Length: 290
Ligand code: ADP
Ligand code: MG
Image (cartoon, rainbow, N blue to C red; front, side):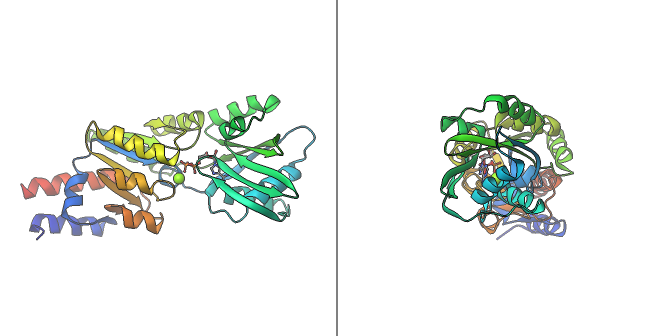
């Protein structure tokens, strides 16, 4: 049975929107040396907006949005929703699409008006053999601003670039500083490109591992565990295996059911500051148990 001190720790957490699934989880959280954070939807709001529309020569803005929104329609990926919303806001009709296929961590492809179209990372475009030409400099600039640039290819040729910004959560920097004050290192894990990841991480004050495919996030957790207990905080989109692989998994409240099921604890109100509160609660509770 759960000792009285632990039971009162669990209920003190619950009162503050910190859900902990039992005594073992409560104990483990306080032992964390490192907290690994998923970026999208965890450190950021998870609702990116299209900020820049850069068609290639010979393509109009609305042609570019038509292609991009055509490929992205129906997808639940946050970038896809943002692209479709940008097209709708400008009154651009989305054309019929077939053969839609997601390329995890890279983008999505489909047939639009008989053309093979893809929307994805600059790395995905490069792997497809596409040349960014005059748009390469713009992509670098946008990424250094902390934006995610996606490249639209039509039959292998660059039709243009869209940039999207996902705002950091209002308390993200504060939440990371609070962890640092109690001796915990924070690392951001992201599938986003290295420049975007570095720009966001610098603003928030934590380390970053970027350009990670879903399997890479899992491997990264394994590597971090070799130097001590690791808590992973995520929303369950692309990161459920990493949540399960960590010493302790923490779901952000607005996250998916998968995250809530997989995790050992949850911060119910999407507060990044809730993570250091979990650690402190664990430590003070265990001090009373021992
Ligand atoms: P995150 O780790 O931020 O959740 P993902 O693994 O979902 O990122 O995606 C990594 C990268 O792959 C994105 O930054 C983007 O460049 C590209 N990508 C993935 N899905 C899409 C999509 N539906 N549309 C455009 N680009 C995408
Ligand atoms: Mg994600």
